[in-house]
Length: 390
Image (cartoon, helix red, strand yellow):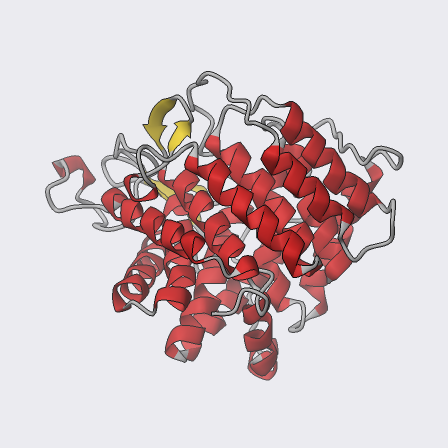
């Protein structure tokens, strides 16, 4: 798999969706009814000791921002540089914050020169390795000093690693992503789990406490498995991706194409999935279509995409963590060629982000969201970059 051939995680998906545009346009994703915004799954996370890295990731990110093929001093470039300053100053205690910073910078750098992307990719590997104890295949803790393992966070890290591999071709990144996937298997439901977990067997637990099986962990693991499969061609990776995607669809899926949040102990299916969880299902569906040529997966991805665009409007996204929104739009990016709705949705949200971004410094600030710095800035960078390259 060539790194230069696929600078964005979903670049290959775009071509696939173009091929199927005619059939996709016939899909009608009628919304079955209003869906209440999901409660963030990370609302009860403990606060570990903060971490301040050595600045090399920020320095490589800054060089990447300078090489973007966007107008100099544009809001996109300034926002990208503001994110790197936030990374350099720290602290940012959670692994998921680091994954969002990296994801946004990779999105921004997708059209940068290969040499800049390779240098940034090397620092991605080094920075995420701080969280691996002792290796990627044994998982990444929530903070560098230790703490509880979260399977959704690890999936984010794996997706960053595989995207950095796609952009650079550095084999160690593919191996690291495959290692993270190995760890994700320890989060699968097991027949030996307590009796109160035996409703709806399957899925990936939210964290190592193994109580809630969550959409964000399960869908992200499915997408990670299918991304890794493109590099390894290991049938076990494909099987895992198909298995977790199918469980999420059968257990958490609504008839309108959107997804529920989780299965509680005792078997209660509750909540409504956030935009990023639905985005993972879109990405996994298109990757499954590419791997199997089974059109049902593409049809399902289109249905979820159309339902998501109708539901996750700009007023709703204003009240969610911008970091998650950037990932959601990245997974929607491949569907721009199918219809105008997803492109219009991105433009509308990007307009709101621009209105809350300082035109001189690139710093994003909005009153409503609730998530830890620097992830709001990361979300702004990802959104503005997707608009700029789209």
